[in-house]
Length: 275
Ligand SMILES: Nc1ncnc2c1ncn2[C@@H]1O[C@H](COP(=O)(O)OP(=O)(O)OP(=O)(O)O)[C@@H](O)[C@H]1O
Ligand SMILES: Cc1ncc(COP(=O)(O)O)c(N)n1
Image 1 (spheres, rainbow, N blue to C red):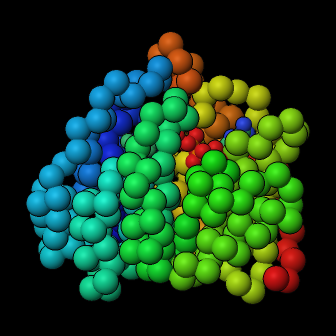
Image 2: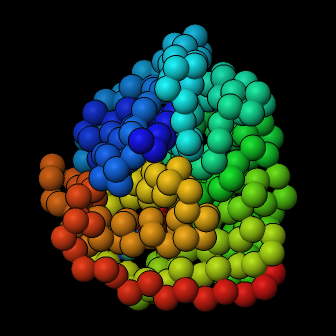
């Protein structure tokens, strides 16, 4: 059985965070495990409360899972603050986080703060160097680098800057791009840029897209797909999940994690450029 561990926050509404990750792992036939960084009281309208797990509780969860079951890949999502980042960094420094997919979650779609802004440097300095892939969305990438993502050139500069912190690769997600008919995610690994372009789906039901996408990349990496192939397969999975997202609740509904079972394969245009 292929195994994957997610270290992230719990979304009581079931659309993002740990819940999205475990649903995605299950859909992709990967045995899912979790270490919870915080409970959030959350629904499709927003985040009503955040209740961090103690550093001790977080460390104990990760140790319990790794000491007995082990894992083939690890994903991180909401890490709350520097204290919890330090716990994850202990495991990273000990070489215990294989195929580490780091989703630098900072602010929820609804606007809620999921990472203390003063913890940004710790995330970059203590965890980025251990990541196989970092998956920022546009606002996160701008906050990390201080570069405005207003052109292709600036996006490529952002990818290069993030990679310079020591990760193996970066995937700059384009979901927040405005005024376009297509969305492009940009991959960079120091040797090449790879552009994954899809038609934009006209929907507000995108709660959990970032978590689900990174979880699918983690699942495919755990199953030994090369990173670029894992991203392509995950892109297909997330696109189908957004296409069939449901208007559950009164706000921005969650993506449909089981959509890949029945939905048609989306057109994904891939372009490669030496970098
Ligand atoms: N309207 C859309 N149509 C097609 N693909 C989309 C759409 N919105 C997001 N995506 C895709 O979903 C994935 C997640 O991208 P996004 O930039 O929204 O991440 P995120 O902001 O971290 O997600 P979240 O909404 O969970 O915070 C990317 O592959 C992106 O291209
Ligand atoms: C626990 C948790 N983790 C991550 C997100 C980000 O997801 P989104 O931006 O889709 O709200 C979230 N809302 N909640």
